Length: 316
Image (cartoon, rainbow, N blue to C red; front, top):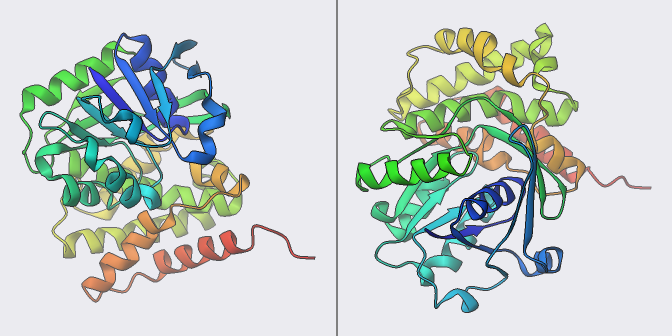
């Protein structure tokens, strides 16, 4: 395949390096200020998936140098607050056979891409492996809880084609499978991330530490219970009918494999980067307002993260 990876954060580097190593043509699109960091086009991956290295076919800050390429797959790995700008930027590259894959955290990314490109050009991937940037061009894969799950929520892309993409990812060393219910699977991850990410960032601790204390468990339980109310109001289906059913799985099956993991929001906060709270608990607050539902814990968490973001630079 001819592949464009938009954004070379930890996930982007991982996808780009492994897919190129597997024999695909892989280009990357990055912001102008980051181009110098990838001047040699070299990408490396280390960690639980072993050591890998590859030279990309090009790294560009602009679509202009990419217009002669016909991309089969465009992987969006940018932060959620950059989705609108990124998809607008790549629209001139979209051809009849091109598919854009949202490989991102939170709510609203798939919806934004589909609004611009159409459902027939948009795939949704639920990513639940963790990686961190060691240095520009080098990503350390630290944890995986399940396969990457990929699908088309509206059934607007042929199943066989999605299965072929999943098989290509697997062959490149990225555990991936096709999912008919990918939207429900994404919402299961939104539940997980909303409960763990902001608290882990604010309290500077791992997922396991949050589950070890009754005080943080109480907050997480309330976050999750409120989200179930919002999902019900918006007719969003997941595999659990009640918050209590999900909470049992959350503490016994989901948190234990990732108990030593620190959320990406924690690392972003430490690095002074903008945080993705508006695509997580902030999105829950917005969806709740649309239905006149009170979600005080999610609202408080959103406000705390935004305040922490404003206070990240100490004042004299």
